[in-house]
Length: 180
Image (cartoon, rainbow, N blue to C red; front, side):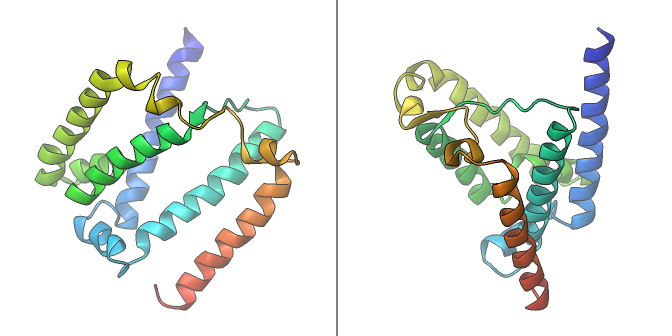
């Protein structure tokens, strides 16, 4: 019981820190997100790439130290397509993703509170209602199981992480150098 409670506390702490960093990075602002979609402001991309490289290295480092055990979720191309369509439609219509909606609500933006929260509830409800019909159909198309890229390539995890981290850091450097 105590361990479960501590997980919730740590989840809350990390959620607050994540929201704070989103807000400080400026990605809870509608204009910043729309400018990213119009390829005029790459703040969102830079924050996401920074999070990917930090998370990728951190998770595999913690796994190597025995602090955590990774349990990737099973996936399929169908799941990715449906999830991408739902996420993309909401993102295009409102200019927020679920994480930035929470941050924008924290900033007091009424569009995020009304339309954003309604979109999350509506989208979740529609998926829950359609799930029984979708789970044996489109969601199973292109099933690839619970594997990671290093497992598919049959290489050590760091053989993928290090080159990918170098590429991401290089992209971040170039974005900064070119003034994006």
